[in-house]
Amino acid sequence: MISINDRKFLTEALKVSKRLDGRSMEEQRPMEVTFGSQFGHVELTMGKTKVVVRISAEITKPNERRPFEGIFVVHTDIGSMASPIFENNHQSEQEIMISQVVEKAVRRSGALDLESLCIVAGKKCWEIRADVHYLDFDGGLVDATCAAVMAGLYHFKKPDVDVDGGAVTVCDMEERHPVALSVLHLPVSVTYGLFELKNDETNEVEKVECVLDCTAIERQVQNAEITITINKNRDICQISKPSGVSIEGYRIVELCEKAFQEALKVTEMIDKALKEDEEMRNKGNWKALLSAENDRYEK
Image 1 (cartoon, rainbow, N blue to C red):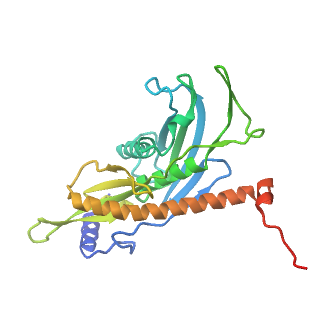
Image 2: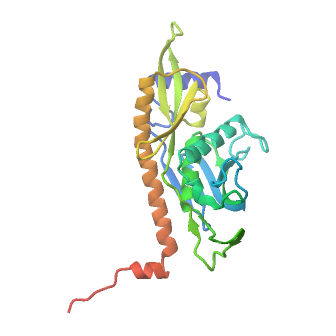
Image 3: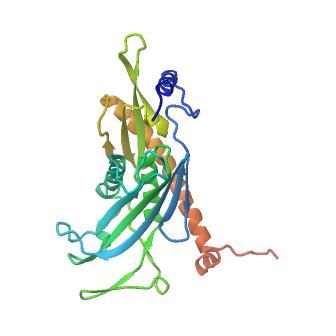
């Protein structure tokens, strides 16, 4: 827990637009994505926060209410290894909130085409599962999780299947090329911490400061937070503000515009990482040889 002196120091710094790590009020920590040897294995760092995501797929029975769609679920695991404030084998409210926000960002916005996961209507479908593990915590879990899960979905490939009547045969990935998921767009979550800055003499709230990408110590001081999920097409997928201080509508519109700029940066970063990984995997194989430029000599 943060001490009273540290709380007061951080609050006074925010009044003059200063942060402990030197960032501005609207500056997000840089993200970095790396992919593992298996499809759908992603490691993402954002400042000191580190997240590992593994995407997996299995054949199951679809939901009775949605017989023509597959299933997408997010499972989070955050324990004392990430931070002493978390307990092992105990799902906290923050962990539940992260799963809900990410699932809504992917499923309700139509980022992942669930109908493409249907194999036999009402009987067989793919269930795509995102297992999220947190190795280090310094705030920004929602934003880091959403970016890592989306990067994993773009990177993941599932086995191809043969359907003969009602029988489904999963093809060996060594014999037949695996199939990429149908991801339609890339939603990016951007979270702002809301701080009530009070007058020292009257103790009345002078203004509510919106701070982008709060660290762990800043989260202990903030009065509330708002998460905006948006893509590069300016489609607002969701706005999540669980509780806390109120904020005017026009300021939410301003935050959405700023979140759009951050979404462009994150999308570009993920696209670049995916392209580099694909080039590395294709290096030396027949696809790379066919697309390589041949040396030509002038006579």
